[in-house]
Amino acid sequence: MKKYYMLPVVVLILNSCTTFNRKMIKDDLSVITKENISMIDGEYEFKGYEHINAGNQKSEEMRDFAGMIDLKNSKIADCDKVLIRSTPLDKPKTYEIDFKLLKNDSLKYSFKYNATLKNGLLSLSNYTSKCHGIPFLFGGCQSFQSRIGLTAQKNLLIQDYYDNSGAALFIMWAGYTINYAEKYKRIQ
Image (cartoon, one colour):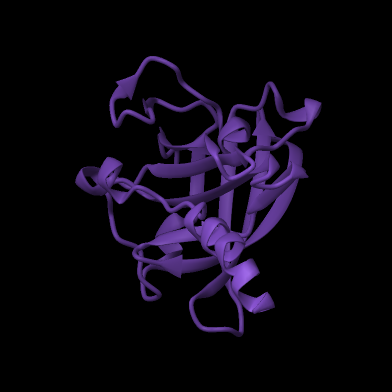
């Protein structure tokens, strides 16, 4: 009988899992495969040139690379380039992605993420989840993740999802899910 008490909690947690909305990028996507993964390697502008908001509309609100990847570091506010290099790992379809943020060709910040190749895009290992209160009773959870790919013109594409879900005593459901994307011009 105790198993059945946990069933609603498990169902709510699984129901709150978010996914990327492929519809917002499908018209301008170059599919990455394990054979052409090196196409992601290159140098890109730090500032985006096209933002697609949660309503699947092009928006005037541009976000820089750090904002889309959810980096919080004061050193990177004035960067002008992003250098990306991919290295295959032992596990199939997994890669280490090395990011270097540059200002006037001088390295300002460097970091790495593991990534998994799924549906022509690289899902980064930057998944974060934070819960407050007692989730789904008197609180909720926030989760975030990014994936990267290429546009049809071989520019960088970053797509994020942000999910904020919760409830008050399972009665008043509260929360939202947002998908958005940003495109960055390839320099080299």
